[in-house]
Amino acid sequence: MVSGNAVIYQPLVSILVPIWNERANVPTLIASFQRLAYHPCELVLCAGGADGSFEEASRYAGERIIVIRQEAGEGKQRALARCFAASHGELLFLTDADARLTDAAFSSTLKPLFTGVYEAATGPRAPLPEQMALPIIAYQWALEVAGNAQFGQESAGMLGSNAALTRTVAERVGSFGWEARTGTDLSLALRLRQHGIRIRYVPDHPMPVALATTVRDYSRQRSRWLRNLLLIGRRYDDRQLQRQALVSMGLGLSFWLLLLPGPYFRKRSLLWCALLTYGVYRRSLYVKRSPEIVQRMLRWRLDLLLFYCLVDFFTWMRAGLEALFPQWRGRW
Image (cartoon, rainbow, N blue to C red; front, side, top):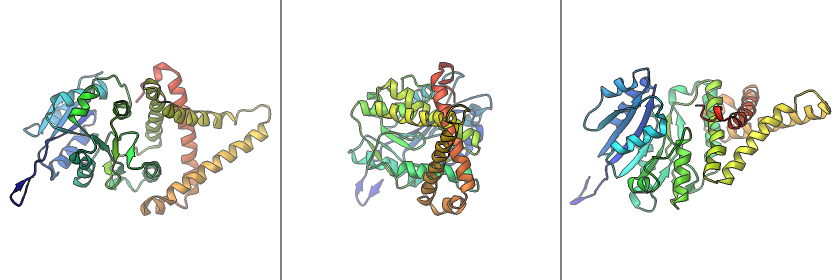
């Protein structure tokens, strides 16, 4: 990059993406990478699965796109470690196969690393524009906006679809070589924090990412996230994360146990109704503070907010049960 007579050095950025059975997302991901204005950068894909993801990705392999095969059973964490080993960049950018890289999100998340003040950064995500016709998408966006509002200048976690760190820091915390059946981004954030590395939160430009389009997929994803807070929080001795998970899991289980027949059923039913009413009220506040498009879809849809609230209570209970049984803990 040249400014007047001065040459401004821009470090090589490696974008690391594990891909498993996501062939349909490969062309759009690569197209968004090729549109990025930042140079130099490279895209490193570890792709595999029965749907031909590796074969599809290999069609684009070249000087700036590195493709390696992901084998069955490796999982996302090992695939990420292999992406790292094949990369060359001084800076690393982490994203998902269903993301669409934009100059705004890419540059803003990397910017704190250019200054040298921070060695890791993360930003939020937003739904793909074509998904916004679905109420479940609008609801997820409302939850994301509410959650992101709690962050200050720094974040306790990292979003796996919009995160960046220096190569030096990645090597310092283990080069992605640790075990993580699920929760790769949470594990990374906790390892960074254990090494005293602060994570800058950059809220300005969300990364467009495909969100869950069905209630079933939404519940599975949220259950996995909540389960990770407990299990990974316990592994890294983070009691705050464990408490956060246990409160939600306990609330979900208690909510449904209140409906069981037995003594004091009427009083328990009143408490159940009170919990549900409060849950719907909280979700209405999330919607009220969301982007206008979300408000137009959900602000007066108490029926949908009631339904999604029930789904959330079920999901919290589900996460607790999955965490309880070892054979369910690695469910994706």
